[in-house]
View 1 (tube, rainbow, N blue to C red):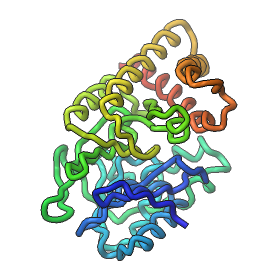
View 2 (cartoon, rainbow, N blue to C red):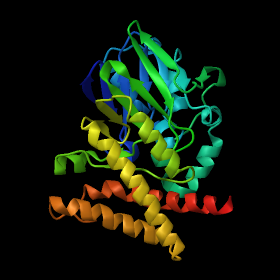
View 3 (tube, rainbow, N blue to C red):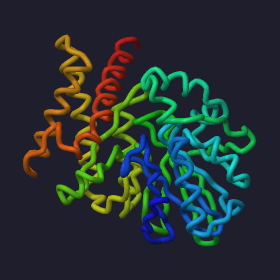
Length: 316
């Protein structure tokens, strides 16, 4: 039932089929003495995670850490359901996000209008995590998986103020959440290189913080980046400068269009021009290409986030 991909160093990628789509959202299982799961995905995908644990022969009581990189529902919406199934686990979340794991009602209220009738289909029942099982690490705090293997947690604002990334020296890997954007698996296969775009949704996109986070993470010496959306990138040297340049470009596009009286629609159209211009060198790829469909919701939300950022700046 589950789609498990072993990535080496006892890391297993699980496709949790966000919104019923393959190759959209992945969670990761590190099969150490103290098992760690990174990301829960939304509630409907929990069945795939549990099935993967069973297929790997991992008993529920061995799962000690469940790390959510941030509390957007596509990353954390299944946390409460997973808490019921894995009673020995502690939930690791940014200090700014903890209250939303404990009481997700505000997250649900904010997301439901965006998805309307499809909210329940996409996100299911979003349950709370018991407060006593939630831990908020300091920047640079470590988690021991077993003797000789620890994870380091870094605070990573830019996409959201409540964002963490996880550094795993054993695999020379970085579990990036959305801090480095999204890697589009189908497009990456098509063009035979990692195709990555920053994700800049409302309400906490912050370009200077995003760039600072990229600069800090680029110094960790990672050779693998494990994207939640989606899969592993190994050409790490190209990822950081690309995402950095695009974050700055996205912000410049937003500023220019808003200063001239435009809005989110014009920003989105310009972002599409940029992306399709890049992809055109690989053949006839347009908005109707099935692999490009994966970008649609991200492009819309990123445009809205750019507008939201500049509106906040005006109020300061």
